[in-house]
Image 1 (spheres, rainbow, N blue to C red):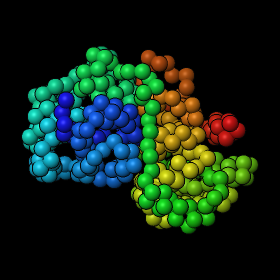
Image 2 (cartoon, rainbow, N blue to C red; image 1 turned 180 degrees about the vertical axis):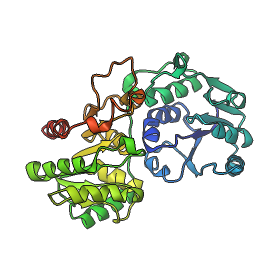
Image 3 (cartoon, helix red, strand yellow; image 1 turned 120 degrees about the horizontal axis):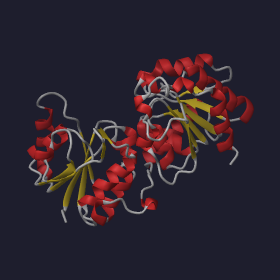
Image 4 (cartoon, rainbow, N blue to C red; image 1 turned 60 degrees about the vertical axis):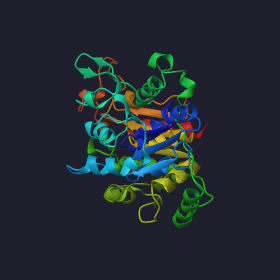
Length: 346
């Protein structure tokens, strides 16, 4: 078994969280090995408290010479094995240029010749088969470890998990104090998403905020990246009850993790914080449209309720292929309020 392993982590917040069962398996089955992780800037804080990674290489291969630059930064660690949780050609090229002798990943995106070992993802006809990301990463890890012929192990081993660091917890306390909700019961609403089509209208988020404050006595924090400040401001403008914005109070993704961990509820679109909430067992209402929820199925998370734009869509169809029928605008406020009330009543 390799003694110096590099794991190339996924590029999105939710995917990093969904990779934690695979990372945990790799750590457990390689006792004593040095495990490094190549992660995009801003994502290492997700795993800093996990104990799964010995060293983070924070970089991304931008530009024509990007892969070569990243590879040369990795070379001094002399990794003998790389597990590519990413699908890209560039990350396989990085592992090759870095002189890593064993390069393991999915054979796709024309990178098969750069891998020394690999497996093929499942297809349905000409399309990729809808596969939960947790299963996708888990299958790669088990295949790398030559366990069960590459098939996923028991589902109870595939639960996502995160841990916060003392510094993340301290920053969260400062932010909650600044927001005026320290030691109060609060919910976190996250109206942003990576694509406009995945964003439930801000005025409807405002109605959920009003319901939480007025009818349930729960304080409301609105979270978003600096690039989403306009969306957050729209929620604040439409809300009739006092709610609090986290934008401008400092912190980063790590402190947001700690804030979510302490919250009573999260309401969000199909976005990374949904997975953070799942990792801490926080009750969550997640809104889906027009993306297919099955790509991000989470296991062992009874505290999450998914609201689908079109719950009548046959399982043989993908919501991604029906942007109009599965538009997130089709989700009405009543459905979300019902889910909120159900979760908070438990």
